[in-house]
Image (tube, rainbow over all chains, first blue to last red):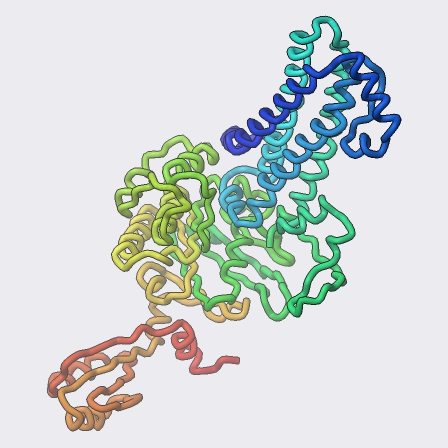
Amino acid sequence: MINWTLYKRGIQRSWKMLLIFAAVITMYFTVIVSMFDPALGSALNEFAKAMPELMAIVGMNPASAELVSFMEAYFYGFIMLVFPMLFCILSANKLIARHVDRGSMTYLLSAPVKRETVAFTQMKVMVTGLFAQVLYATMLGIVNCEISFPGELDIEKFILLNIGVLCLQLFIGGICFLCSCIFNDIKYACRCRCRNPCDRIYYSDDGKCRRKTGKRKIRYILHPV
Amino acid sequence: MGVCEIQSLTRDYGNGRGVFNLSFWINQGEVFGFLGPNGAGKTTTIRHMMGFLKPEKGYCTIGVKDSWKDRADIQKTLGYIPGEMVFFDDMTGTEFLSFMSKYRKTKSNGRTKELCDRFELDPRSKLKKMSKGMKQKVGIVAAFMHDPEVLILDEPTSGLDPLMQNRFIELVLEEKAKGKTILMFSHIFEEVERTCDRVAIIRNGRLAALDAVETLKAAQVKKFVITLENEDAAAAFAEEGLRISGVTHNQVTVIVQNNIKELISVMNRYPVISIITPNQSLEEIFMQYYGGDRS
């Protein structure tokens, strides 16, 4: 259920994006880990007690002064949620919906490769990307903490935390990929993922703001029209 | 029993668009032309044959396999030129061709170079930067390089210059000589006329005619625009008893059906300067074939 040629191409295409994300994650990890200080942790706790809303906005809900909970609060509340999710949205789009939207799916299907194989291969590209990100973050975290604060990090707990993140991201990725497969147009695929009330409002030709009514036809991407 | 068979294929897109109750078959080693004006349902038919679309009613088979259910199987020995060339833009032509052959898992790749040479194609530039004609050539090479048994060609010569069009027709004739089955979809009668054994004409999603190309040609009425030295000669020429559809100044438009010799003998006696045969549109041919009945 995998076509290695297509898989390799998918990886080649996501390589740059992964590299950028890795760079951002590296920067955050290194800077923030170096700021860890049990005393500072309690100071931030004080800060959070004073202004809980402000801290919640940036996803920083401090727990205890342990290094794992410090990491959890400062990376896994925001950075490690947003970046893999961005990767999911972008790559799910690129892997299926874009091919259908542009028409290059014709070439992928005019070969002795099953639809299932095409879909599963593309899905594996996305999953590989997610794995790579979380694995990288895990290793980076461990190495960073061991260098700066040897013995402080509860490695077992930290790995468990990363597995949790991976599961969550796989779930999000699944939704993204499903949307990418179901809708035959990028704008619908994106819209479904990024649903918010404004989506249903659009501007018609006469410049008036209208609410979208009527049923939208959903066609299955794998039976393109 | 043919290599390809289409049986009461129906897909209704509403507003009279789509294909309706289409049935025909194609024999082994035959070049089959499929003519139709834009929006007649050519591409829809191809999509069914390629297994991209599931028929609402009826079925398509290629080599006894069902186009929809056994698509991946059929594609092993199928070559396809899409009507619109959309590639993966970031690749160069060479990368694309090698990607396709690896993706298809074809063993031999011997034809690629020969085909590129034949069409004078240098596939090393980026696909995004290629002109329409070059893209078309890449598409042709991609369709023929794995030496398929059945070829489905959707307007294969669009974007090619006349020289390349001729080379393409030579290629099709060579493949035909090798016993390949070829389906050519087009809206240009001349293209189909030179290669095909049988021709189907589709109109508004329905099969309007299916006949040997000779029969269609015999029924075809040819128009000649003959320019003479002066207006008097033209007037006299028009009186010669040929079917004349119009006289303007020194030009006479003659309609000929199976009596070309008569025209030649008449022309011998007049000071003819030039003869032009205007290209006939598909609609004209169609109307002649049906005696102008368009219902």
